[in-house]
Every structure is written in C-alpha cells, then in structure tokens.
Picture (cartoon, rainbow, N blue to C red):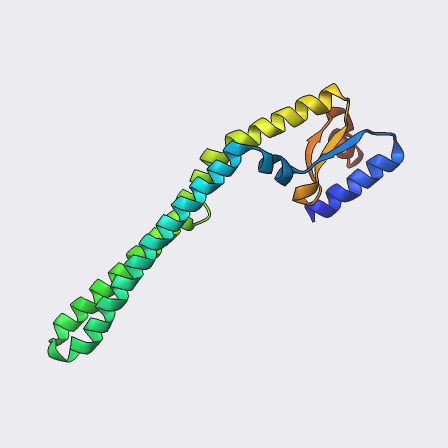
Length: 167
C-alpha cells in the first residue's frame, strides 16, 4: 500500500511541476564496493557455521531419540518420563538457539546490521550530497522497486495535507 501511495505521489508530483528526479541501482553500487562483498561473504560464512551447529545438535538429538525408542522397554515408567523430558528440553533448547540466531531480531540480523549498515549509510549520505548539489528533488532506487532514497524538503506536502484535513 505504501508503495502504491508513494508511486501515486511521485506521478502526481512529476506531472504537476518540473521536478528533477534521478535514480540509483543500489545492487549495482554494492556490487562495486569491495567491502560490501566482503561483509556479505562474512555474513554467509557465519550463517553456514550457525546452521551446521544447529544441524549437528538436531542430529545428536535424533540419535538420542532413536536410542531411547530402542531401549525404552528396559526403563521404568519414571526413567521413561525423565528421558522424555530430557529430549523435550533439548528440543526446546535447539528451537531457542534457532530463534536466537535466525529470528527477526536474531544474531544474524544484528551481524548484518553491524557489517552492512555503515556501507549503506555512506551510500545514502553520498546520494544526498549529490542530489543536493545537482538540485534533484527525488532519488529513487531502481533495485528496490522504486523506493524513495532521497526527497527534497520542498517537495514534502505533509503539512498541507494535515491542514487540508482540518487538523
């Protein structure tokens, strides 16, 4: 919905006045930045290590479960319950580790932010400098589906919309 509104706003803005609009291709830019590629490789390596660790833990748990199934007839009822609880506890531990590593705000997300954010911020700073120097009103990112990367403050009509709404 935001993209539709943004696209509509862009079309209206372009059609009502002669505004200078430029675009970038962030994927192309990042492809030319060696430190970005190195950071991506580092992130991929870390991700693979964490995936392997979790897979190893799951494999060990699977072996433990199969062993339990094969030997459970030898256990007393209480021993069976204890083994089941132990297996369930390890399952929860693995699920928790997966969430910690790969969840929405997990370690991988944080590592990606730590390594890529400085490069992204620098690119956006440079886009803003160039846009201001060349008097562009807007800069769109072709790689991000036309996402707005920079907008001149003079093209912001938010206050006018609020006023028109009676607020």
